[in-house]
Image (cartoon, rainbow, N blue to C red; front, top):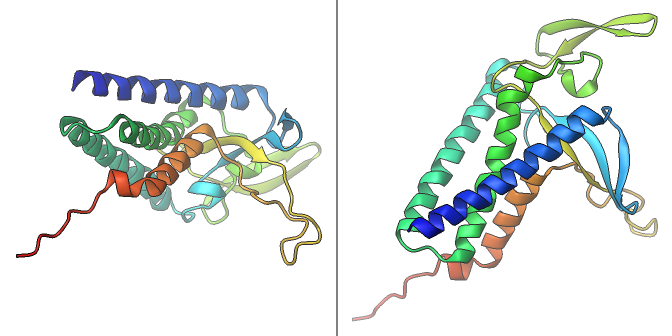
Length: 219
């Protein structure tokens, strides 16, 4: 039991360190909205921040909506840890251990952003991803010779944005109906999102092995 537990802890730890290193590097060295090619022109770095759920979707403008999302993440992580512990005690396979560890690392990585980033970084009211209409948290943005009023997202412990940076810069051929010329996958994501997605897709593909159905006996 000690070896699987140690393996999972090391894997989650490495992924968390890598995820946070990438995010902090982007946040401290890139300007909001900055593009940089990563692998040719089809995979680029594009610095933005996500104030809510996956793919930039907000979870409402109220303080309680954001807090509920962060608390949900904490509960989900707790349930994943409990499930992983039970699986290790039952002799989980190495493959399934990796799958669950990927999901755990991804969920934890994004939660860390929400928990701590607002405590260490100053919020710029002029950056769009720091603005949230309907929040009631008003501020003034100074842009050159012009000042204008904005509404800011809620700030503090459990209220921070999630840093995103990877984007596929690939478009559908113009000849394609409806989607022609548009981005194939327009969402901007991070390593934590990638870990969650890989883990879930892996579990779906291998579900017959991971979750075998018990054969019913007749008689």
